[in-house]
Length: 406
Image (spheres, rainbow, N blue to C red):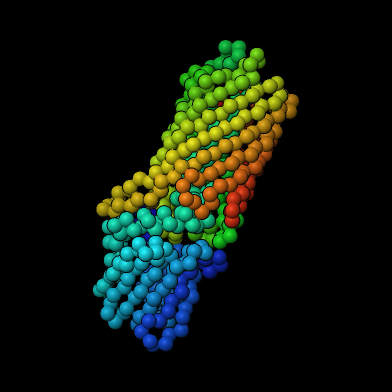
């Protein structure tokens, strides 16, 4: 659906900080000066280029060659148009010697491009997206801290590892055999301000989750994160569904502060950006382990997680699209929490994250901290901050969390 919309829907052009850049040159000797045009939406730019409209009017009736660059990556696509012969070509030049050149002819070039995408280019779109993910600091599906794969891993790690602390009251209930099965509802909200070497943006997430405690040692949780990212006028949307099964192998008690929780999980995520002509469906899973030491007023925990993410082929009205993702992510996080009186607490965290396969941001560190208020029944409110610091990438994240027991 995203690719179909990218072909047929117009989008608004943005002048400042545009991610797409097209350098057009004349190829028939008519002497039309070179032209540089920028924009935030590739479909809109390509439509105007092929039709010699809007900013490209000076090339009306003129043969041309256009080199398209994306977010600081030079010459990712080349397009040629010969209006006399009614032919055009498209080449994913970022693929180097392995790139195919696709030829179109006739008056309905836009319709042919649609069919071209419908046939999935014999894998060329998939290879193109893989190349972008390995190089671009704002890639949609993979390769950066705010790409779909990284978000899938982060939502699980944050909710069921780094910030899954039991309250002191619930630990006493466990110890006194007074624990009652039931639901925990939690809503995490995030705002991210991101800054990269090629563009800046803002990201908003709402992450509702429900955890059903079957016993002291076992629960099942469903998490539905929704994320929107605006980067230099280009819109990116993500929605996830994560199913986790926390297993409390060792529960801390007053006599023994050691705790161990193992959490296997599965993920499914959909991402899409009409402006960036990118997206797809990505499935995966992994396992998360958390070791903790609980004392009277202090808790220290260490979490480690490995996750696997694979692109899934989408089918829609004859369109077949594969995002070309095959990634693994390793995360490690340390957290210290100190109680202040009966209800307040403060915490500090640091997390190290790594893409195992090729990525534009191979590794990044995430220091953070916050303060919270909780009631003996398990309800709590937390406010916090963290940063994502990688090569050429910085994200400043602010969080607000509500947790309610049923």
